[in-house]
Image (cartoon, rainbow, N blue to C red; front, side, top):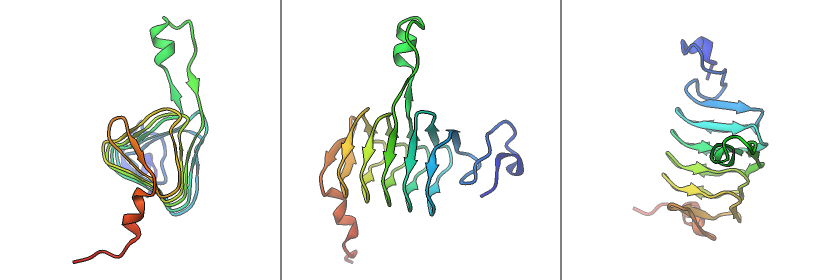
Length: 148
């Protein structure tokens, strides 16, 4: 906890979650959310992160894209689209969630997955791969008791 100024990280924006995370815009982040170091949380296009989410180190969540602006020699502007991360979602290390996604409650986004723009995942989905495939009900295996 703490902000960038209290962590000695001059030049980084204040972050009540992890002083080494980059949070821009005004995302709506509910309670009991854990955000790891070296993450990018972009709320500039509208972002909601539900209660109880864990976002692992290095993950990126975007609500904007500058691709069209760049390849059109700045003739087009920055695109923005709201993203919703439901309640109790786990986003694995180095995963990327692009703008316009709707990830349902209790989903798991695997490490290094890239969730494409506009992806919609029902509750308890597992999203894995590049580009991420949505495996409906795939995250339910994590709700079962561990066996030895």
